[in-house]
Image (cartoon, rainbow, N blue to C red):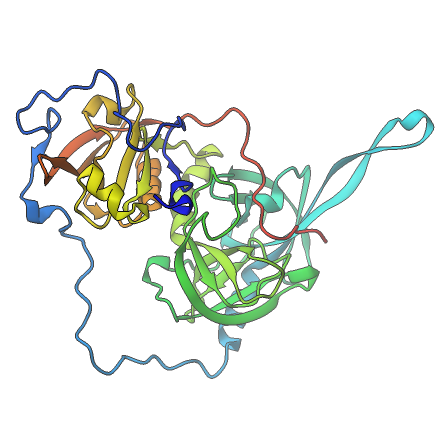
Length: 408
């Protein structure tokens, strides 16, 4: 096993360090002659990677369907600009000095970021790291008005936050698009406040999709599935919208890699934001569900690893640890099983399974499709698993390392 692949880990529950080839949950016994857990429904071998909702085969080779680029981005910018805001934060700062080095506290500017209005009654989306630790939040609208705001909800693990301007009546909400419909190469427009230069517009394309913690140096406990863009993003852009040519938000600008304006920026897909938004507005936080396993992308395994485990499928998430008292442990899943589907959706990467399992809902019973090596053969089966609550660490996850600090 290569040293690079052996260090990559995706955690769905309590991280307990065990070797990949460990025996799994002690006391877990198969009670069926076919080697499958009780309650499992065997499937034909051909169904291991076939799903009703699976992507269609690529079209036959030929002339590409070339999309015409815009003559200008001004219509997109003009339509979106009234919905983009500047966010100023302030808080108390302790300093040591004076007689005998006594501590003193005082008000100081904490940060600067961007945001966008999603409801005309004053609901604004931004990054959690923009408002984290702030005692006071001011939102500046496109007409230069500054209004006080409060935190309505936040989720540090996805770096998503919702702030609310109370008493607002005439705000312009921006339409939210479908980030799943984006393709690499599509035009996008970023609007924000880099270095305090309010309502700056930059344009580029979607450079890549599905960027995770291996690609961006962020908090390892987070949930990331970034869009990558070469639209210029700098300090102060955090929390601003990434738009398609219809003027719809398809992402929230969040991070850069290396220095500023390197042509490598990252945005949270708007579909992730839309999924969490109702809960954040209602409860102020998001409670995650869990299978209770630790997994790895099957593509990270070497051919020797696959041969030793008897794995013959090419895509999915291989289970390397099962917590005995977890939903997966009680259902009979074990080390070496490969999860290839969750609620009818094919699993391409471990991060995809992590997101689906964590957002499905505590107490919900879901259908999991698994491939288990049995007597040298790959036996696919489906089973029902009732998800438990993911126990969050007592200590709040650290602020993401974004490659810059959003300071004014």
